[in-house]
Length: 200
Image (cartoon, rainbow, N blue to C red; front, side, top):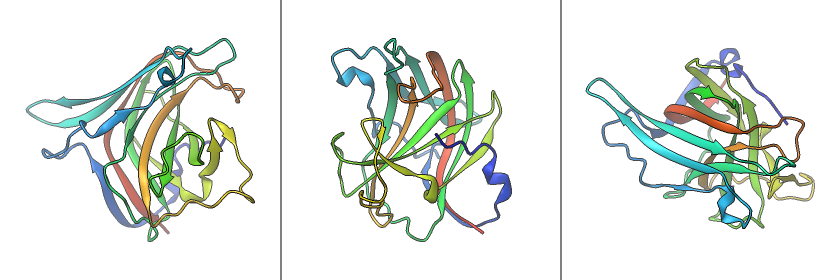
């Protein structure tokens, strides 16, 4: 498990591209789909991405209820799969977020070439967020590792992430079946935007 708390403070971002901007009046959460453990017979967790909008501002909130199995198996997530992104000119992803609730470990999950099957590799990064604090979280592409159904794959025999054709961006909270960190309960993640950035 790789943690990157406050890594953005060590970077000077020379370029930034907003991939998803939930503060924009034209933004929508309708194109995001839920991907939680209920797609399996024993799953009991739930994830939902909702829009928070007032007269003064708007953002999205990723609500989760994590009900893992006794061994920690369980996850709740959402993903955006409506377009392809060429992120080859950038070094990582930046999230502008605030975490609250019972859990603070999250994942970002990337997929390429429209490979959406859980039997195919996904490229994932684990990170812990500060409690109840709006933060810019930098996640370098070099720290994304290949996984299949939560199990790490050998990066020497798995094709690398093709950053010229990113076709799925996912957010997930996890129970920790393959980790010493175990999580359960209700949490929320407020999201202003998700960007691709060049960190110098």
